[in-house]
Length: 564
Image (cartoon, rainbow, N blue to C red; front, side):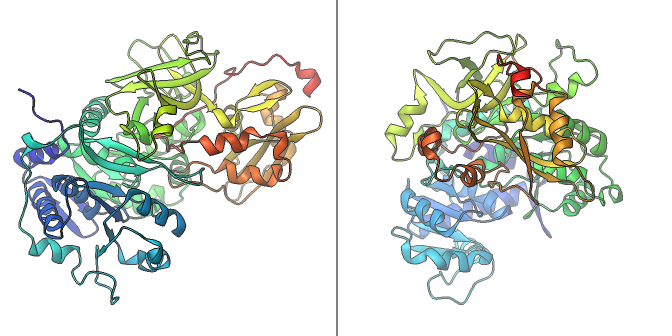
């Protein structure tokens, strides 16, 4: 018997087996799985009543909320395609995405009313707007808000056996570095099998309590929306990342797990209110979205009292590909454990990974040779929405080409050293910006760091560090350069350091290096034309995590004396 693989089955199962269990905690509201399932089915009925047809794109502009979580099931139950929107995007970006996707319905929180009003006249396909909370007094929005829609609708339950598992279920748009984001198409099958694989890798069970610190508009909040529902675990929502509120919810709801980008983890470690809360329920924190460091992994474990390791994936892979806890047969001594747990990691079940050279041949598993990560899994995207050429560029020969450059070792651990476009070429030698950033972050005064190439008359380009310091701590340019030189070959080290209050980041916490580079390369694009070429081709994938750097990961040939 072949039962279609669809995430609709997750909530059905949870309703059957965990009806009275708390499913969602969202502000003052608490919903059981019976209530969660009932509301999702009413949303499906409301959409059909509103004229939504199978395959129509239904967009949500919302912070983390039980209503957005309900949409992951109700929209798909109705046969439509869910389009979660990144609330941090600019008006023109949101308008582009809605038009490109051909969305017919937009649900929005009232806090985004002015934002939507600013680009509403540019929308070509959205015909119906619904408020997710209070009903604003404007004529272009429906006179029924989300709760009124559900109250007036009859529940609708799709016939599972009639679902096409290869049909589109969710559409996520990448964002961050290119002018025109791409729509990542994830099918029912993609989502179903990724949830099984990720849930197995994370040892998720029905006692699990997870805090949704990562926005749900990023590939299901890294898949948690699905695999936690499947086992009947408890979803705890937080609308805005605020360290004291994170600690309060951990204590009040006995949260066991959460996923963080490095900037979030750093904020929690350095929050002075941390000692006021009981965090003993925490079992694991996974860090992704950007490169982590052994220093941060160690600080999280010591200060928050739980296991911590990195994870990696992309929107195109639904998203998790790897995690980096210690394998039972791998021996790590002392600080090596933190180095290992900050690596990109090894493939989760259901994922095959390779690291290949320019001829698509596997590079040696020596922890030094560099190649591009390519992946094959059930979670890899169907393709980019209406972009067959871009799809063909990344899906070749049955593999997905990530654009991430890495090494791998004999134990199967991968270590990303950089994105293709972020490798610094100084005097003919490749320098990993992530490797240098990790060393900078090991300095006790450094809160954030980004390393990028700047023009140099001798070497063509050299590394420059942009650094934000921790509150009430000081470090000078010379001190930080010497800190690097004591730990790296001199040609890899920054030639200069600029201090900033904070680094610009995308919604997933990834530093916007393209924006930072402009200042130094303006008018000199001919010196580095590949920036423009690479960024025009960049698929702007939002990685679940790319843990880079590693002592000796990029051994160079140019003499240290010549570059000192």
